[in-house]
Image (cartoon, rainbow, N blue to C red; front, side, top):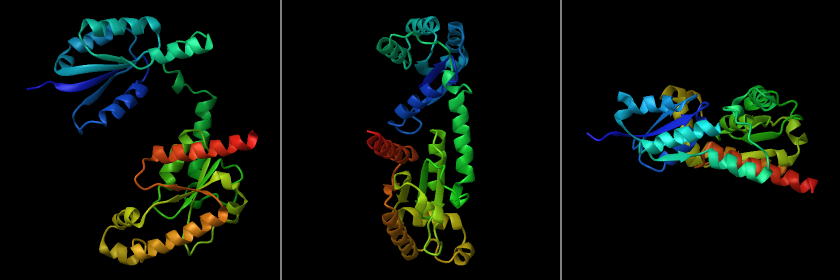
Length: 277
């Protein structure tokens, strides 16, 4: 029986960076083609050697992705992997070296520094709290402190996009739109550059709404929530309001949350930079 193809993520911290890269690479292959396993908080190359010589390690066909900050440990692990004949990708060493050469500064060499509870960490937590407090129209009487306001009809990914943007350090409010609902007055007082209208297609959200309703009794009670014609009327109303507000429109159908977030951040930064030029 063939050995299990495994990417071993090795890190002197949590290994999240290497795991993310490994997942992105593995996504280019059929599901199940490769397994990803972490060896976190490595402080000695012997930890890696013990794993490779264990029954668990010997049962796998392994390649290694590593993100090790400390120079000496990185060299030891890299040398061990060469000795063992294991293909390896150093994801952090070249990047650190490039920035050191660019700046003329010495790296700190502190594992896991990106996860430390510094001011950026607390800012992200505050942004997450803000997003929760301003989710689905809550707190919409005052949007003056929002960095970004998302608007759109139901099931256009407002909440997950809000949470993702909050993790990037933005205070995000999201407001649902529906013909029978009057938008909050505070929305018209927000800088249009900070408002983003989320749109998708009837074909994309009708099945999602129907699935959310569940059984026929629930669908009957909910009226036109999942009806394609009613959804099209909602879109028409939303597009009219977005045009009135002068906001940027983001199409979320067929996109990952990260793609929509990147589009929003790039647009926002571009406008704010042009104003400050």
